[in-house]
Length: 133
Image 1 (cartoon, rainbow, N blue to C red):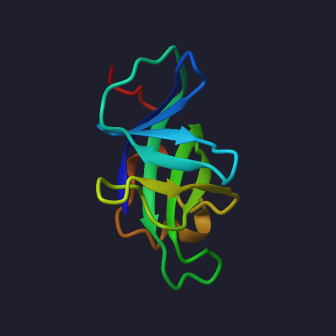
Image 2 (image 1 turned 30 degrees about the vertical axis):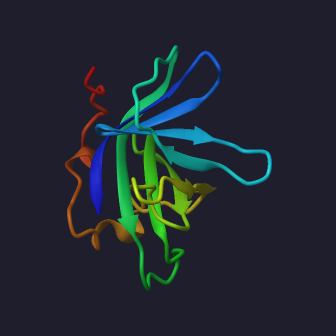
Image 3 (image 1 turned 135 degrees about the vertical axis):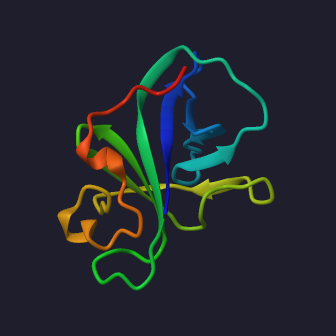
């Protein structure tokens, strides 16, 4: 499990950029496939901040009610999370593109999994802190 801060922004050209800590990804939707994350190698200017908060990244295996894939969850409100499945994992320099699929499966604030988290995120009991500028 990995925990950090995220920021989702949008450029003038309506491209979404997702920052997980210091790593940036373009979040694009090609016409031929579903949504993908692409590793960004250079800094881009953005116009609009869409959301900020915490993120959690889970590698799920053999959990009866969850899909066995990497899960990314973004905090979208106070104890509210949006889940995403990453069928080929997070993009990295050697594999810069990965599909991202929204899901209603969530782990972070789900009481069913709270006791089984190996690291108890302290933000589950705190108010959302602003993303550092």
